[in-house]
Length: 281
Ligand SMILES: [Mn+2]
Image (tube, rainbow, N blue to C red):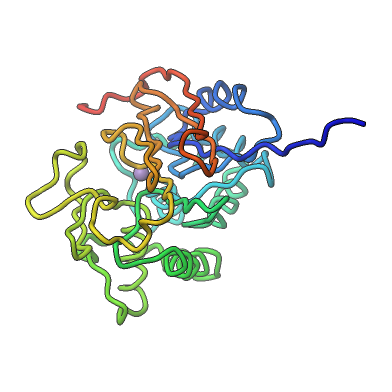
């Protein structure tokens, strides 16, 4: 009798930002039958956004990615409802023959997902939201992005004034807060008011603000939230948090972590990455 085949646990992978070569190096170190769950920002700043999207898309059911702020920015630029940024590296992708197919695939990705009991988002969750509410709010935005009015939705959804949640929010004001929290959050107050200016590490919180994952009583505290987005934070592995943006595009590392129930079994795999961008430039 042959031994039963134990399926490999999936791995979560940090922000790629167009670093397709680093993805190849990292993927070679992960069991081929293990699922891959990307924390978003597949594109921009790095050298090969189109190739990165192609590779993740080609993985089919093996891979899934949540949407990050750069992914949503790309969709809005492609829809011509938002200007490109000075540091964008999206032109080659936008002019590639398969651009429409790649963006159509990207537009259908989730903003939050649960895998093996882990809640995966790009940036963070507000302290008032539990796992179920986070998934419901993400699904509201996913419906808009997948529907016929997606370009108009993207024309309206950006806005820094949408910095706090309350249950009575409706329509685009509601969805602005959801997108800001899931794709851009780093610091917020104990009441969940978000800051969008500070990008330095956890010790640089403005007065009255703290990293979203340190808010006392946050309603996802009994879940391990997996996120990226915050390269100056570095790798964090604690019972309630797995932060995986280790600055691949900036010449740091690309990180994968095994989504195992026990903290001690959450194997970390990393590859060194060439610096494509200088964060001070
Ligand atoms: Mn990001």
